[in-house]
Image 1 (tube, rainbow, N blue to C red):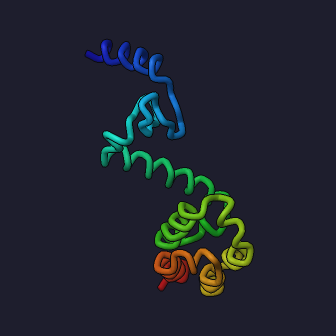
Image 2: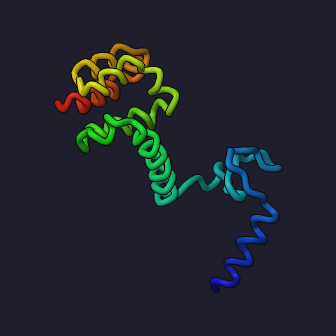
Image 3: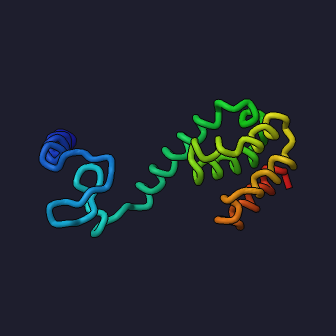
Amino acid sequence: MEDSLGIARALVEKHEGRRTLVYDDHLGHATIGVGRNLDGKGLSDSEIDVLLTNDLMECFDDLSSFRWFDEATEDQQAAFLDWRFQLGAAGIRRFKNTLVYLDKKDYTQASKEMLNSRWAHQTPERAHEIARMVQGV
Protein backbone atom coordinates (compact mmCIF):
# COMPACT_ATOMS: atom_id res chain seq x y z
CA MET A 1 0.00 0.00 0.00
CA GLU A 2 2.82 2.44 0.85
CA ASP A 3 4.30 1.96 -2.61
CA SER A 4 1.01 2.76 -4.33
CA LEU A 5 0.49 5.81 -2.09
CA GLY A 6 3.98 7.07 -2.95
CA ILE A 7 3.37 6.59 -6.66
CA ALA A 8 -0.08 8.20 -6.41
CA ARG A 9 1.36 11.12 -4.44
CA ALA A 10 3.90 11.85 -7.17
CA LEU A 11 1.26 11.44 -9.88
CA VAL A 12 -1.30 13.71 -8.19
CA GLU A 13 1.35 16.36 -7.52
CA LYS A 14 2.50 16.17 -11.13
CA HIS A 15 -1.04 16.75 -12.38
CA GLU A 16 -2.24 19.23 -9.75
CA GLY A 17 0.96 21.15 -9.12
CA ARG A 18 2.04 22.51 -5.75
CA ARG A 19 0.95 25.98 -4.67
CA THR A 20 1.81 27.71 -1.43
CA LEU A 21 -0.86 30.38 -1.83
CA VAL A 22 -4.60 30.12 -2.40
CA TYR A 23 -5.61 30.17 -6.07
CA ASP A 24 -8.77 29.55 -8.05
CA ASP A 25 -8.79 26.22 -9.88
CA HIS A 26 -10.19 25.80 -13.39
CA LEU A 27 -13.74 25.72 -11.94
CA GLY A 28 -13.20 28.81 -9.79
CA HIS A 29 -12.85 26.96 -6.46
CA ALA A 30 -10.43 28.32 -3.86
CA THR A 31 -7.59 25.78 -3.79
CA ILE A 32 -4.23 25.45 -2.02
CA GLY A 33 -1.33 23.03 -1.72
CA VAL A 34 -1.71 20.08 -4.03
CA GLY A 35 -5.26 20.51 -5.29
CA ARG A 36 -6.91 20.98 -1.86
CA ASN A 37 -10.34 22.45 -2.60
CA LEU A 38 -11.04 24.83 0.26
CA ASP A 39 -14.60 25.51 -0.88
CA GLY A 40 -15.63 21.90 -0.50
CA LYS A 41 -13.37 20.31 2.08
CA GLY A 42 -11.44 22.94 3.98
CA LEU A 43 -9.02 21.76 6.66
CA SER A 44 -9.31 19.03 9.28
CA ASP A 45 -8.60 19.78 12.94
CA SER A 46 -5.28 17.95 12.71
CA GLU A 47 -4.28 20.02 9.66
CA ILE A 48 -5.21 23.22 11.49
CA ASP A 49 -3.09 22.06 14.45
CA VAL A 50 -0.08 21.44 12.18
CA LEU A 51 -0.42 24.90 10.63
CA LEU A 52 -0.74 26.56 14.04
CA THR A 53 2.25 24.67 15.42
CA ASN A 54 4.35 25.67 12.41
CA ASP A 55 3.27 29.31 12.74
CA LEU A 56 4.02 29.37 16.48
CA MET A 57 7.44 27.82 15.91
CA GLU A 58 8.19 30.58 13.40
CA CYS A 59 7.17 33.13 16.03
CA PHE A 60 9.29 31.38 18.67
CA ASP A 61 12.35 31.33 16.40
CA ASP A 62 11.92 35.05 15.68
CA LEU A 63 11.40 36.04 19.31
CA SER A 64 14.38 33.94 20.42
CA SER A 65 16.60 36.59 18.85
CA PHE A 66 15.61 38.92 21.71
CA ARG A 67 17.38 38.47 25.06
CA TRP A 68 14.23 39.52 26.93
CA PHE A 69 12.24 36.66 25.40
CA ASP A 70 14.61 33.98 26.70
CA GLU A 71 14.58 35.61 30.16
CA ALA A 72 10.77 35.83 30.34
CA THR A 73 8.50 33.51 32.31
CA GLU A 74 6.45 30.88 30.47
CA ASP A 75 3.32 33.03 30.72
CA GLN A 76 5.16 36.07 29.42
CA GLN A 77 6.60 34.03 26.56
CA ALA A 78 3.11 32.80 25.69
CA ALA A 79 1.89 36.42 25.65
CA PHE A 80 4.80 37.48 23.43
CA LEU A 81 4.10 34.58 21.07
CA ASP A 82 0.45 35.61 20.76
CA TRP A 83 1.50 39.24 20.18
CA ARG A 84 4.02 38.22 17.52
CA PHE A 85 1.53 35.84 15.90
CA GLN A 86 -1.02 38.62 15.48
CA LEU A 87 1.31 41.43 14.44
CA GLY A 88 4.08 39.61 12.60
CA ALA A 89 7.82 40.17 12.78
CA ALA A 90 7.71 43.68 11.33
CA GLY A 91 4.69 44.63 13.43
CA ILE A 92 6.24 44.02 16.84
CA ARG A 93 9.41 45.79 15.77
CA ARG A 94 7.38 48.98 15.31
CA PHE A 95 6.82 48.94 19.10
CA LYS A 96 10.20 50.59 19.66
CA ASN A 97 9.42 51.94 23.14
CA THR A 98 7.94 48.61 24.23
CA LEU A 99 11.08 46.81 23.09
CA VAL A 100 13.30 49.26 25.01
CA TYR A 101 11.33 48.60 28.22
CA LEU A 102 11.41 44.85 27.64
CA ASP A 103 15.20 45.05 27.37
CA LYS A 104 15.19 46.78 30.76
CA LYS A 105 12.77 44.17 32.19
CA ASP A 106 10.37 47.00 32.99
CA TYR A 107 7.27 44.96 32.23
CA THR A 108 4.87 47.53 33.68
CA GLN A 109 6.04 50.27 31.34
CA ALA A 110 6.33 47.83 28.41
CA SER A 111 2.67 46.89 28.99
CA LYS A 112 1.65 50.54 29.09
CA GLU A 113 3.44 51.11 25.79
CA MET A 114 1.67 48.11 24.27
CA LEU A 115 -1.67 49.54 25.29
CA ASN A 116 -0.77 52.99 23.93
CA SER A 117 -1.08 51.77 20.34
CA ARG A 118 -3.41 51.40 17.41
CA TRP A 119 -3.18 47.64 17.97
CA ALA A 120 -4.73 48.02 21.44
CA HIS A 121 -7.56 50.12 20.01
CA GLN A 122 -8.21 47.60 17.23
CA THR A 123 -8.21 44.51 19.45
CA PRO A 124 -8.67 45.83 23.01
CA GLU A 125 -9.60 42.60 24.79
CA ARG A 126 -6.67 40.73 23.33
CA ALA A 127 -4.25 43.61 23.95
CA HIS A 128 -5.32 43.99 27.58
CA GLU A 129 -4.98 40.26 28.22
CA ILE A 130 -1.51 40.22 26.65
CA ALA A 131 -0.46 43.33 28.59
CA ARG A 132 -1.61 41.76 31.89
CA MET A 133 0.36 38.60 31.12
CA VAL A 134 3.46 40.63 30.26
CA GLN A 135 3.16 42.43 33.59
CA GLY A 136 2.75 39.12 35.38
CA VAL A 137 -0.68 40.06 36.71
